Image 1 (cartoon, rainbow, N blue to C red):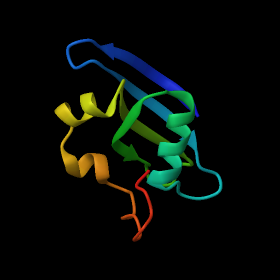
Image 2: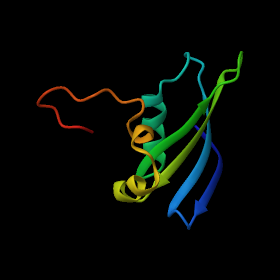
Image 3: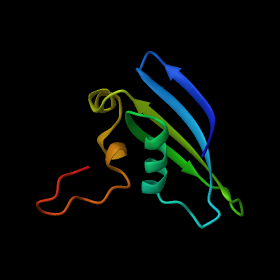
Image 4: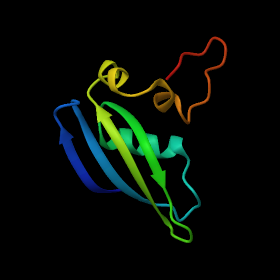
Length: 95
């Protein structure tokens, strides 16, 4: 992962990140991208957009990193926070 741009947005209390991933092994899933971003940035990560141009091996990701889930909940719509995750099975805690 290569962080192309990282901005602090004090008004919304978040970091806005643009990162590039090399996907030589095939197209990366949203879950794989999220795990890699969580390793680098601590906090609540919300993926805004994943873009891979035709024929290219690199993937560009736009994400937002909040200090807490409460901050993310006040600015991000619910569908964006839940996108890309499987529903938890019965008796299983949601990650």
